Amino acid sequence: MTSVTPVTLVTPAPPVPPVPPARRVGGRNLGSYLAAVVLAVPFLLPFYLLLRNALMSKRELGSLEWHWWPETVSLQGFADAFGNEAVPLAHALWNSMLISAISAPVATLLASMAGYGLARIPVRASRPVFFFIIVTMMVPGAATFIPTFVVVGSMGGVNTLWGLIVPGLFSAFAVLLFRGFYLRFPRELEDAGRVDGLGHLGLYLRLALPNSGALFASLGILSFIEHWNAFLWPLVIGQDPEYWTVQVALSTNLNQQAVNLPALFAGALVAILPLVALFLVAQRYIVRGVLLSGVKG
Image 1: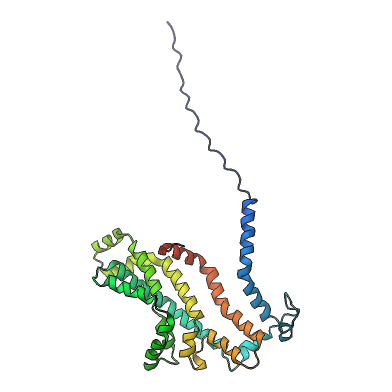
Image 2: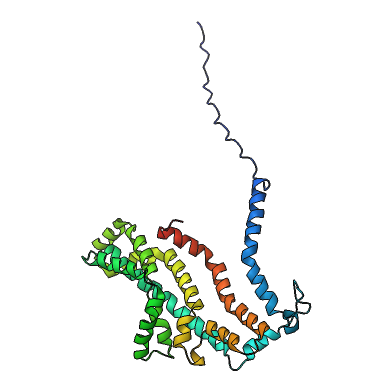
């Protein structure tokens, strides 16, 4: 009787995935880094000059000989900038911070509400209203400056905080971005909210607004920078030194017969530090918000 030898089935081993080559920093990557450094130099040059001039003495700053760095670092410019009783720089910094901290979130919230209403609330007049909002972006600010000043002045807004804040609370550009964002908002989420009994206000507060945090943050930061750098409107409305902003306070140094250049550069350096810190902390929110807004470069 012939015995049958059992056959053992051998399962082939799974193929070993190829090992990706080690990423080396060199060649093309090194060239990219060098190009980035070279392109960054023109943008960093003003900051270098501002810091260098703020730490120089009057003699060195007025000398015809070029110095890459002060021979003796002097903080007298900062002392003169904050010690000038005629120019309350510290109070002006506080005014700028207060105005920007109030205007930025309020203006962004109003733009968000307007953008949601134009995008999601079915009103027959929404398209004409949006058209007129776009038209306001085509009108130069110089054409509306005097009428706005007349209206605010007739209401007693000169030398008041509300006169500095209220006229800048509406941004047609922000409304445009929010409307484009909410047009692409998933309708399924809103349908689920309507099943739960939410109206337009509930849908905005509970669904739309929490999901637009990146765009809200980016536009809020840009609005903060815009209000911090505002000069002409605060110059006209804040005529009393008590209501000067930091930009107006710095400009008064140029109207004097003898300009203290180290103090002027020191004040400018202090004025840009909050913006530089804000940008370094929130730059990723700015980029992400622009991408979510649908704006293509």
